[in-house]
Image (cartoon, rainbow, N blue to C red; front, side, top):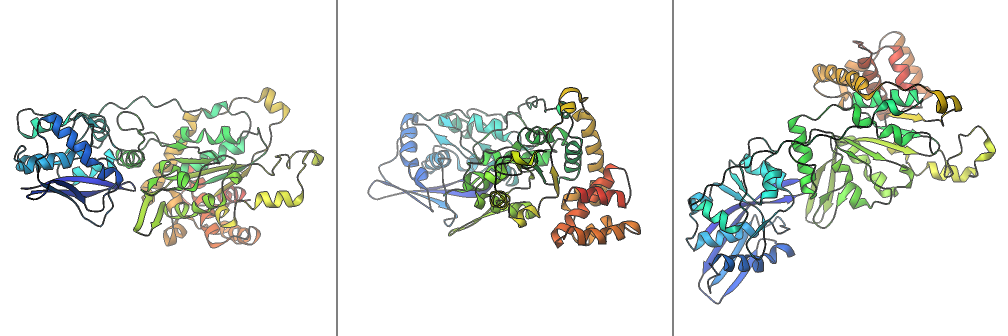
Length: 494
């Protein structure tokens, strides 16, 4: 007796289609799972055995072989409990194979037959939709998967309900996408007193999706500025929100009910490991860099992060992808984030004070501290700014600045211009297209030649200067880059 069931496994953040083949044949009673199963998959035997017994259909005293194809892809997690159980029932004739063929099963079974949620439901829903299959999964996973437009997510609470549906005795209706929860109120830029250059940096960074580094003494307002950046970003479109949802689902996290259109903001602690920040593990899972995909990754006290962690961020800053290499193969994780980093000017933080004697760090201490952020990493940061400590007048009587909503409107307008002109944000411009749109003429060309010499620009730094200048011009409503736009962009490179 033979049956097959469609299922999937999550590799990185992508779902890989898996065919669960079940063969019940003569011989001594046994239950064997092949096809590169992990420990949790091997343990499915006992969960499936108990759930079938609770259903009143115990395993036959025969040789049972379960093959998970393709056999060269490692399968981890308990998500194959449901397809294995349904495959055994189909092989015994208790479930019609024709009805089963239109479904993709995915879920963990409790010993009493209850379905439990597993990670990766959004990615699996995308795979089921691509294959034209209805997704059969736990109710919690169905609510998560229903956020993918067009997917039919069915939510049996138990194995018995799934069997009744497949036998036509009970019809499960697709779960409706839950309404998105109200997004949290973003922190307002109007709360920031003084720091006009810092606010301008945030506006430029948001408009072009540029990376930024803030340097200043403790208490100057670096973190306060960085946490206001999400309030300037436009909401995600549906496709981007699904893409971010896939990452969170693969990591076993949730962004709340429905499709969350808020760009993610992640601020990991500097003690985080390389696997926690960049991603990894025996079964590769997304790290903080991927959880910030299409949003903001904020590294407070950036020099305190481990050097391998910082250097590992160089790849996604260029390509938007992290590739985790293993002996069994490479896994690509999406990580097109906007980096905002903050640091002190020296270990004690007082190197920029008016009183030069207040800093207790030696010259070697300062150099060692500064070298924790390597030149190649700094070269990938578009905007650099020294954030000074507020003066007495700013502390006591500085008027509130523009609210985030006003600045966000200018950011949205500048992004709209860039997208209509070139189909991407300015941070993604490259090659001949970048030079066509951002190289200045006349007085601007002369200034650019001078800046290349004065700032000792590398090829990468030159391109990043042009991208920022193009963004400044877009915010000003200018059709071409002029010397004033180039000068402001250069001020953020020093």
